[in-house]
Image: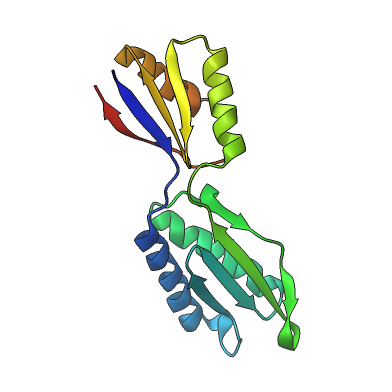
Length: 161
């Protein structure tokens, strides 16, 4: 019975390379000279420290540009609200989301059931497994999910016959 999985995974080494590229660019750019701006990655969390709001926005743009160059879908980034830190600086947390949230998975399954295509779908942890009798039905499901216009990066893996 053919099946495939819908997942949302981010390539961690690419994120690490993007963050190190931003750190390198901050250290060499003229407009960041003498500032206390820095970027650090702790697990699935990126913490930006900036002197003021302008530099925080520039760092945010740099992060998006460098991750896009590394082929990381930037929809996986969740920018938290900036907060004041010590020394009149600003700190912002950026969470790199891995896996499909429960409500998004339920939305995908509801859309699949409403399409009346004869497939079975189930939530397995942070992924959604789709199985059906025909390969063409599974390909229709992939197109259906792609057309849902979710603001979330999805990959379709483990396509088996």
